[in-house]
Image 1 (cartoon, rainbow, N blue to C red):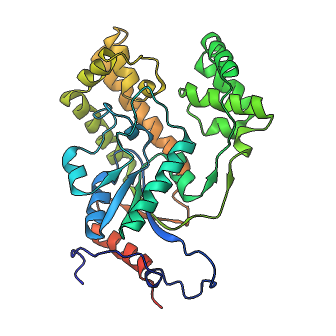
Image 2: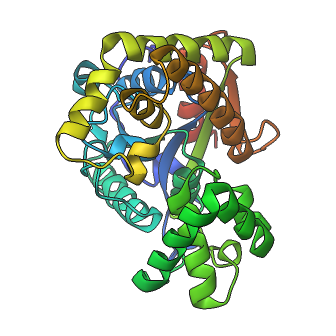
Image 3: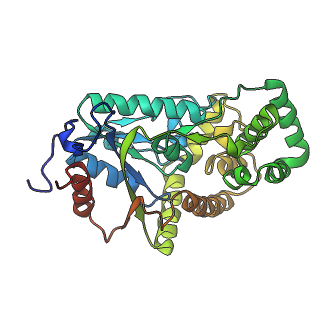
Length: 334
């Protein structure tokens, strides 16, 4: 078959080469995962591969969940989403917060539906927690919200600031703090809430179960200077195509500037501009700086020496090469 010919994927044991699987065991179904830093090219790569392999895309980007947040999240546009079905995009309003547990549950449901349609699921995104929660079958802490404690922590945060809150978490649970951006006050407070409610470290409450899937992970990477150039160009394009107007519209619809989702990169800087705290040029510069810092944190989730990730340098690596790796995974030699 020519590598460009669309291949109808069918869920069968033969495709997974499961001859050595014990008779009564459950055969894990395939999941293709595409990871990499912001602006590396995951969207277009995943669409091209899904077109060739009769796939559907499941977003693993926490910011794509929210309606009305399109430009600042570099959300796949209507044309891209018409090419290939996309899932877990535009499923909540900005004042709703999807926990990691909710995302994991919904991602599993969507992946199961894709398998039932006889198609191949692609989990695509740069949110390390979201990817790992699905791929590694994390057992997420089920500590019920303590609204009184949370309110107390929020008030304390107003006194000591986000850095003070994060510093306290770093003392109590260094591993949890290392994986939480100090500017993400909501996650810092949730970690402290879980610790104080349960008496156990947040980082020690996340167990793992055997994976539900037979997973192949492709990692996309570019030289850092080239990636930074693409980030700068993307941010300038966001400004040019209407990010300021998008943020102004969200605020006009009554969404508070203090919502966790509106403190994300891009939104907080434009809100500061609209509030007269910075110029648009300064806001743009801050967006570029914050995104570069975010890219460095993403690298902590997907390391270059991870033996489970097949890394591809783009654009020198081709879609053809990636397709061959996936087909060999789906149809291993006997």
